[in-house]
Length: 481
Ligand code: ARG
Image 1 (cartoon, rainbow, N blue to C red):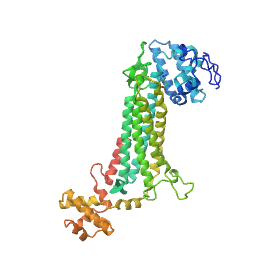
Image 2: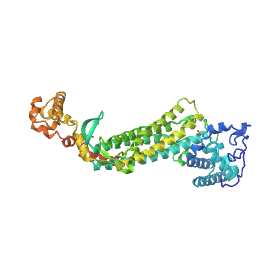
Image 3: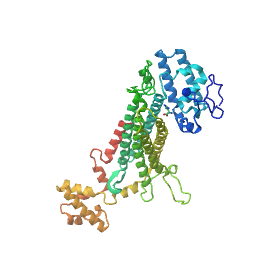
Image 4: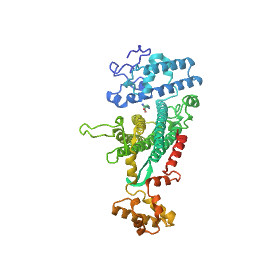
């Protein structure tokens, strides 16, 4: 422990092993004569995980004490002693010297109890006009605000890596799929930029959630507000909130901000999962579109030939965990009457886990994308396989022959059937064969029946043409980075 004797010894403040197990809790035991059962203490305690809120709790307490002093509710010297004590606690935590105690339930009571040990009586004035209910809501909002900022930075880094890849592969062709059936040729750059859009929307959702969460519940008290003339604007602005929350009941019972984050995180995890799935498919021997280096592959303990894309699979798999966090918190919240209920303590582990999981996945995804090397030849061969230029034939008939698209679609379909019967590609069919299907087809059709022509022709807004990709990559840099 390495700490001095407490200046204000109190029951329930001794360490778990030596304390008097028959004494009521010192923070709220006034109307109690007995101590909690050990089982009660076990299920009740959140310190094991909510100690992650220590920095936010200290910041909130400092803002509250300073506000109380400025409002004349707390003597200035007490506020000074409190802030000094809070600094010392922060230093103890940073040095790993703080004794987190289960019998003190949570981070709020642990810090307040230690403050009492360090500065004595003034510590008992800190909780004026405050409850753990508004305290925990404030701490969690502050924590989540930082977590969102971290995710945003990680998403921007991932976008930047994808944009680099897109530029480097602006004119590399690959098959585009629908139903995982070869559909039309696209460029690798275009495919990379599709993810840049997804992650851009994820950032938008997180930013939107951040905007709404950035209101201060501090001063809502237990649920009804307080009779003290507190200045909620002052604590809000000291903590970087845009404004105080409007309704004290809502302030302590709301966890929308957790759910919004988790919903946005789940959608983002879904995008990462799809990316992971593509990396798995692309790096298989059957596709062979791309290769992850040794740094992002694992071997098999039995099969010497294996190169497994474990990290991509884990990114795919961890999306389940993040959705699980959303489902957990939603289920905890949906039946609760106003205002606070202890059920709400169950919000923290899922949200902490989801935020950490998402942060790791975003980092790994960026590193894997950077690591990825594409096989240009295999991609190019695959891009043309399966007569992916059939739409180009139909479009050519519309453009050059004035044929209605429904009709040209049928003609191209017959040409595909003929090519399949002959075991060749559309572009390899002799002109005479094509003209037996429709005599409006002329020599000029062969200009459009190549993969390269197909992609370069798709210059419509948002289309896959290499020049589009280059312009879109530059635009994405402007929009997102
Ligand atoms: N540890 C509690 C939580 O995480 C803090 C709030 C406790 N409030 C109460 N009235 N018991 O929700």
